[in-house]
Image (cartoon, rainbow, N blue to C red; front, side, top):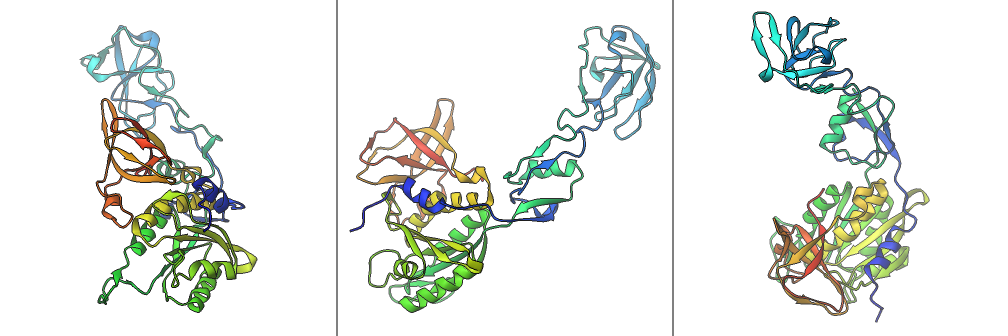
Length: 402
């Protein structure tokens, strides 16, 4: 029997030689969730001029503590005239600070009489002023290569007037389901058959990890069909993902097909769930290699395997450090468990309170119970040959961050 390999060895084998994919330029409005292929440099100062942080009165700091005539009114978007000493300007949030002014007093602190304003004396210099370039300085790095473009980053780009961005090409993934017992929803179930829950689950996870699923297919349980479809898929995709067929049964043809077509880097891991997981390489298009990830058929094993292996693989192909590793946090176990020779990834919900984080394990951790993944905020990592008592600290991999 093949020796069980640790997860670290699997990741090393999976990511060996992986380099980021080529880049392309796309419209910023279509770039949500994409990864920058190169750094973006600021074209403008933000804000582009000194402006007021609130509604109030702009003045020279030295004139505080006296009655000042209101010399002008400055709304946001309106030009400001130079402000003479001994006067003030009515100004609104975002309005351009007039030359000669260096602070703004909020309107609630000002006493008005006709066209004059009594300014309090205790004003800090520069109060309520947003200086030019405070957020972004012209010529500075706006966003680094590898940044995933989510809401704030897209706003940052728009604030520079940028309409096109250089992003990594999305990894192309072929998602193949094996097993004649697996039926697609909408078809009648025959004796001994199950609906395919892995396909929609893994497709959503892959897309969440930044991939483009370019081929979805069911593979008949024959050696010839398995080899043919794997070879075709490797010619279309950067990564071929299969579910099922990597165990040792007579109808499990995937592992043998990978060995016949390319190479098997690793098989069978010392993790629970997900022991029958295979990693390898297949001949791809234009002399390139396609990475192969053979996930177990049990849905929970596929779910856990996707987070542990597909996510960092997509991160490497996209050159995105944020995808390369799952965030770790420490929680207090609200359960007791023990492990054998395999590391256990338990599906847990996290409760955040004043006394810290509590990890609550789903009651049934069997690899066929997909319900355990629906409310899972994290995977609690239980080392091999260990015991965790209720109340003890446990390391957790956070799943809600993408």
